[in-house]
Image 1: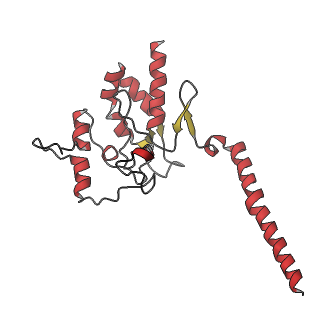
Image 2: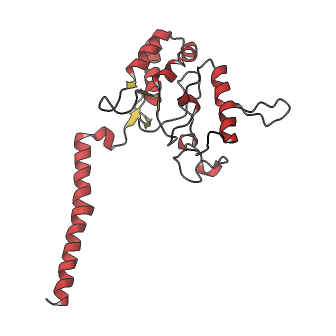
Image 3: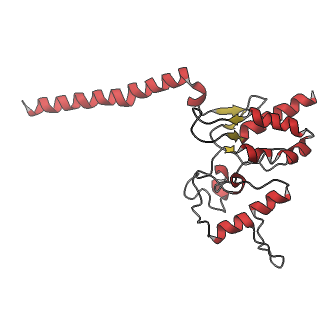
Length: 216
């Protein structure tokens, strides 16, 4: 068999594989995604009452207002840092990931327990003292960041521990908020994998809608 014929066959095979893997397969996956699971295929985007996209159900957001349920801590501030004003360098090595600090690391202990120093400007307010001051029972997910620092969920217990604070800020009853939390609990995947969790963004969007309905 001639060398030119071998080259021709190799080029045809390469072109055929390119069409199959780089054109037909991606188009098939796109069509299947947009037809069968368009919500998931487009990023699981969530909208507020005005129809504006405010985030994804897959990625957490920081909430600090007394009127909202707080998310769990994030070592990357949920990737919301401004690249031009990233003093904490949270975006220096990417927008997702854990701190990798050992349990005995002083930096981790200071972030969790705080560093009281009344004679210095270097006092640090720890996560546990802040939660206790707000009347919120400290739970592991409200103290420690997730492995990705983008986890959108907290445990039902962590959400229930914030009911008193949010109810006071919103003028709602504890039973109303408890009902809202129960309606926003995501169960175990296939009923056996993982643990139940509350998507904080979904919960807070539901809280806004609930408050609006109550004022009508």
